[in-house]
Image (cartoon, rainbow, N blue to C red; front, side, top):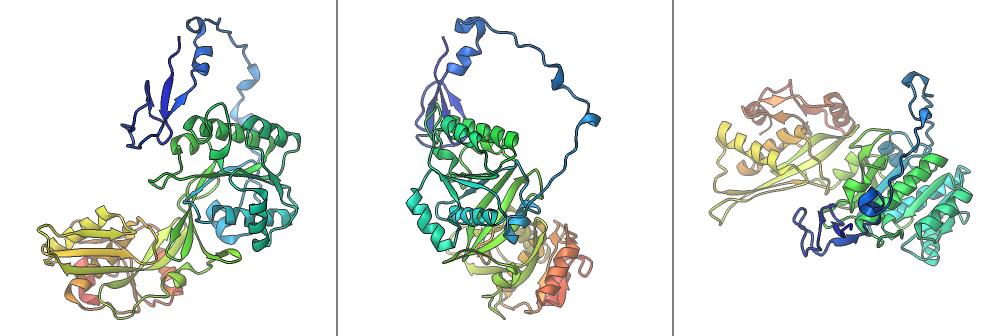
Length: 437
């Protein structure tokens, strides 16, 4: 007889009994019972049923040269920043997963996209699993969304699919995937997995571009990521960065990965930020020690951002190292290089490094900016305001080249920084310090 299994809805860890805390991911009260029906049916004689041998399908194997290449016939979303992240627009039959914290603006931007699709003459269905039609209408009227948008309130998976297959739309929004009801409890790992797989099959069969909204866990990732992200074609995250909203792609079968779009939440909805460098540098203090402009790269987009550092005498036996928006391990390496190669006394100082604006960028090209900002903060001398820097720092203190250097330099000049410090202009950190500080 098949035994009941319990599955962690956060990471998929399986156990023969429900545990208070998952030993794999550490989540509390995350175990849900998984039905053993599928295993019993597949168990053959052990499940008491005769195992049926499937018939061969000779048409299942084809030669690669006989496959119709087709091609990506993209259509634009009508929002330039979103099209940048997608790699040029939507693809018919594509399935996307959009994740983000509650209230970040996922439903808002999707209603705006739905309105753009309606203006292109496409039939759009919005599955409202979390809000009533009245609530959606109030938001839609504020955003100026057309009244032709069709709402679907059915959350039972089989009934919903039957309704959609009777008259497939061209664009489908499911808000959210955790509200769909299957044989398992809504929101559980099994229910999310089954619903995502079923909707993906439907989208591919009818070439319906589908966007699934996913809740995030306390760690900031979509619930059940290993189950969902392997199935969908693209995974996008909408996150808060100061006064802005940043849309990132972490997976994209039809475009670049790591691309970034910047928005500002306004009364009329999500407003595109066409020049992010100017927006993020708008509040930069001029002439302050520890402040430097760094040229970074996110996907295909180059940005000019302010990097700040502060050093203060520590009251603790072990000095603190705090970094925000940066890879903390790279910051530790740069601090070690400064202390060893430039003999900068950091042993009794707390060091704080921050990428201003609330962005998170893990880029080796920010190393030189970190080094210069920390050095400037320690000695109390400002870096010239018309300089922008880029470069990776090696353990010997050398300044190394980085990916997309030409794009970064072009963005620096476009942002108004005529004097640029980059690999080739300086050979090591000591030389860079002498030139700027």
